[in-house]
Image 1 (cartoon, rainbow, N blue to C red):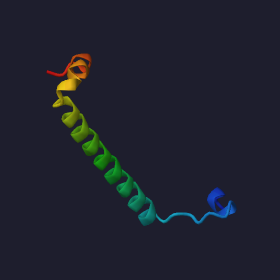
Image 2 (image 1 turned 135 degrees about the horizontal axis):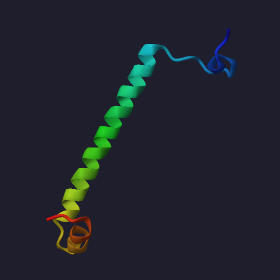
Image 3 (image 1 turned 90 degrees about the horizontal axis):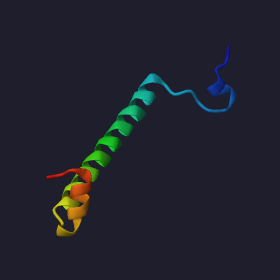
Length: 59
């Protein structure tokens, strides 16, 4: 029986390829989270962000 992915002309991924994609995605997500945290910390140090600090409950 032919899988749907092969019927549609797409090559089925090997287990190794699938894991590689998952790991790459996790690294990208982790990097994005660090970037977001750094940006938030930078913004919270800005005196113009007092309203944001109060709104978000930051000390």
